[in-house]
Image (cartoon, rainbow, N blue to C red; front, side, top):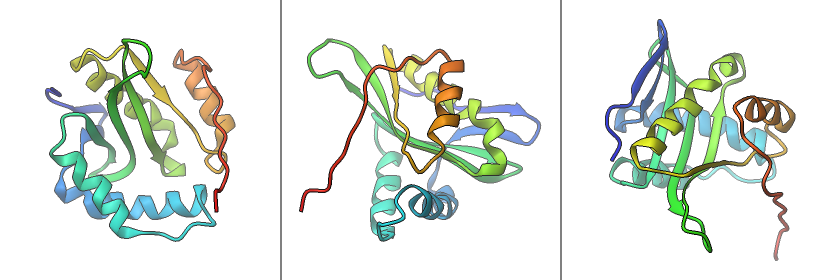
Length: 159
């Protein structure tokens, strides 16, 4: 259940559930994300396309966009699930990105995720950040939004 998500923050700026017509703009931004967050990785358009189109017909996988004057300038992909050993429903943000010059509107994407969480009786919203994407700025914003540090993630290439 989602209800209506198309919230205009200020004139010309809104957060909305993405639709099929938004794909070219999501793709454009995804290319920037890959370059900044995963510079050692090759861009794979089929993977982005699969992720995006999966959100269109899912009840627990979403893509919302930050639209400025009719152009998508940021997005958030997230999924609804349950914690493994605790009976808590969670929303896990899989990716969030806003073009640098529009980051002052980041609050909108978080409010959009919270809107969908509330509509689905979600207990907790979990957000991760990557080292290549301004983790200090994101940390400051998340703490201002009352997020708490709960876990630390590590990764290692396994070849």
